Length: 370
Ligand SMILES: [Zn+2]
Image (cartoon, rainbow, N blue to C red; front, side, top):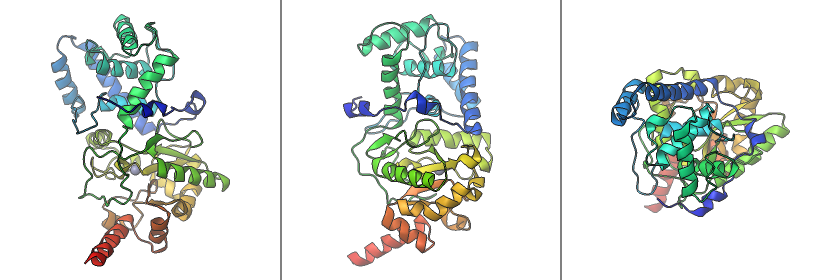
């Protein structure tokens, strides 16, 4: 697999920014439960029966977590739960070495199991032992790094860029800002929007969040304007590639997560999510201690400000209250999609939903053409 070197230019948030990261309690629990299950099975089972372990994991978690979705140009190198854990943790940020035990070691081992042939899935234990050290050395050799067996700054940078390539692949496509997605209409599995980037440091995020450049720039403006009006926002979620959305949906269904947690009735099937367009964000604010997504956000000063002002920056709440029958989704006051300033203004002033607007413009186009 070849990636464009440009990707390496994407800079991860600095540690100072990382300390401001927030993970919603529901999200944290879900990820930690998954990691615990992986570790539990791996430590209790003989390492020779890899296939059995995988089947067992699938059975226990109810997810085909080792399933690889091959697509035309973007293949998931690292397993989706590991990518989710990496994203929520804000990347590998500490120096990792022999004797340590942490979730960051899990993330490291998840990467090693993808890149180092003899480092098996079953070695993912959260404990940095001799096998992990040897695999780190092999990884370092592979990327011409000093073979120390310790994950220092340089090794960390390469490892984080590997995760980033999986989370936000580089693809030279035109963003589909006007794609009319709903419960029935999906986008292609391998659709990856163009110009994906990590949100800049001036935007508070929960973990690492990517968006296409145009929505990211307008989001930056919106966050700044909100701040000026006295509102502190946090971006909980942005671009989600198909595999990550699939994982979240299965998790949501399996654990029957509360509506408040966004991922139950609200969460779109993979391929149907506006998050796959690279133009959609989930937002919370200081009033909710930066956690969410939550329906309570609609009644906070930040949520109300967004309802009245987001269109000025090209963003629209996709699933408003009272329009559930049209959108097919529950009220999601945290979910905003970028659709461009002109379209957003029309949608806002005419009190439409994005779907209604896109259906209307489609009709107009057809009539004009005929
Ligand atoms: Zn959302």
